[in-house]
Image 1: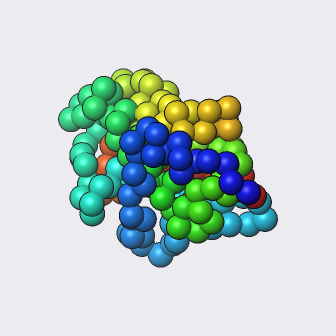
Image 2 (image 1 turned 90 degrees about the vertical axis):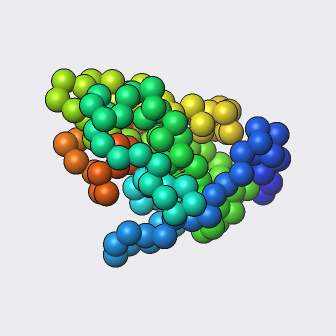
Image 3 (image 1 turned 45 degrees about the vertical axis):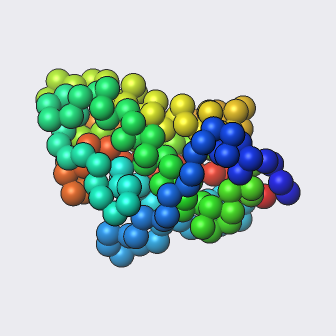
Length: 153
């Protein structure tokens, strides 16, 4: 089944990154039936963490939103490596974690960086259920982590 997702990525000028190597004992994505679950993805590009610190303190919400986008790109790379991007039928669920300074309550706006990317690429098939959660700490002092569930053919 070809959905034209690669053509859409090309049209948007988006190149999927290499899959980020796991930082511990897990795999980047797992398929069960027609669902692919990604592990939590950090804002890593070319092997480097793009930012560190808490959103609302060391990292602004405005700067954190593109970090969530990078996390989503990394999730897509994991799906692509496992099943191929053309197999994606629907983005089912996105869960975003935001390392938040005390009093910061803008988690939904930060995680929009991931949600909006999926909408740009997949259109209606990118509309998904979502949770945006504020946490006190994330691995490697990253500001954002995103995981997702995809329906695949």
